[in-house]
Length: 536
Image 1 (cartoon, helix red, strand yellow):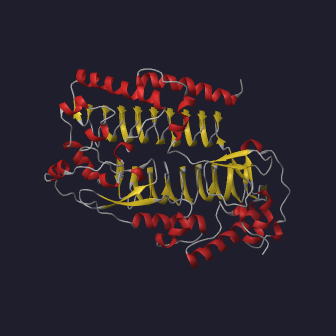
Image 2 (cartoon, helix red, strand yellow):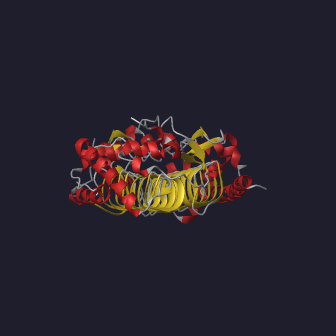
Image 3 (cartoon, helix red, strand yellow):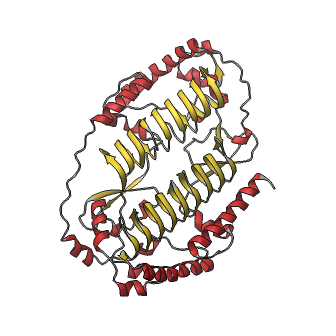
């Protein structure tokens, strides 16, 4: 049995087990539900290797056309590269000319201590991952996107840490969930949205600290278990028959709400004082990071917004609260952008509505999968903000989990003093990053883990003081290195010694500093090096 076959076979066993646990019985082979589980996830891109012509899978990083590609299995990490004509390097253009033939972007990226990974990309320290991307520190994951620190996950987007989750999105610190949207610190929940610290809940919305609730109404244990068994039976049989189920959002996509009960409840809602926000700590952090990394103490972070956001920004749609009309942003993450426009509430409004809008016992007794969109309509409101844990002074960031002093971007997780990032986790002094983990003093670093003092790095691990590097591990004080490990004072994959390296680094930073100070941008980035014109 080869490793690829073993990945799917082991996950198929886990799938049958999780279905039995969550739905009461097995429902068939994992492959039968592939289309449904992966819908709304991704995207991945497949390109032809410039080395072998074989298909190579990428996790949709914006590498430019005209670049060269290869699969991770095609990288020769023991390869010895010819010395550069280092004395001919006088500026960035001549530097690109010298290293250009060594620039290959690598797909099928499976990094760290990983094994049994198939049809996946951007996977770090994982075991048994199938048809997924952007997954780290996890095992038993299939048809899922953007997550980590998890186990037994099928068809999920935006997850971690979680255990035993099926077709759920925007979930953290949860276990045994099915069809859940935006939930944290909860367990044993089905077809619900906006739960926090809830357990044993079904078809509920915007609840905090509730148990044994259906339609937002808490029930006696025996009554809850009786109705739960009935509803799960319906889910199971519908899934067996159709090989898919609608999401909690799909139920209400075309259903016009009746606002009467929401407006009645809102009469009791007081005014909420807005937090006083201060950009100064973030501005100071950016200026400090720029001085350390670029040799320029840049000020006014928004003056460099395009430079920071061009490869890290996440798309957001505009929306308004259906209750107050307050403006809000719907982030293109975990389906937040699909929330029904006529059912949006702010975080405070959603918390208030969750406490007061409930179905009565007669309505709950009649609730079924077939009438859910009508029966739940009066409580089904969606909040495109995700705010949980210790939060302070986060500005223009609609999604924050344990974040302090963060600015613009989205989904700051256990991070502080960051800006213009998407989904940084455990980062500080990090700017313009896309899905970095454990980064410190970094600018425009993406899909990387454990970086310190780095600029324009992609798919790298355990590096420091690196500039314009891709698929590097344990590389330090180096620049323009691709697909190498264990180097110091290297340029273009060749160690040149400390003195010569620092000379070239000074030239690079002087040129970057002048251009970015003049225009607020620098045209070269880690994603366009491979297609950059050289030899002007």
